[in-house]
Length: 171
Image (cartoon, rainbow, N blue to C red; front, top):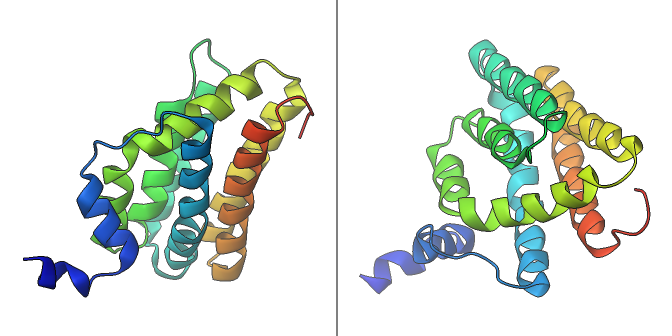
């Protein structure tokens, strides 16, 4: 059985091994999760820009709207944030992106929760920047700009990582 898995893409093999149970328990674990998400979700956003159907674009837009609304609420917006990223994965038309992202749900949401807690306690500027990052991802996908979508997603994840590591500065 291991021989079957050895030919798989490393991130898919990792996701299959983790099977939705891994959750980072320290800052170093969160940072490793952000690092792994950069190329994976960047590529997914680029593919979504190339392949998204009008229905996929509408789903990403609805997820964006739900995230922006949740961002203004009293509770953390981590569920809506994850749903946005999942809608982007679905828009690739490749079920492996959806499966891998879903299998890393707890790890990704841990990072989102930390970053969103920091954002919630800071200036309104931070929330606006977070909205702009998500909107840039959506806009790039909606206009079919693969390179911009990849870059916007990588930038967003990089900024989320920065919000966790450098939480004293408004970014």
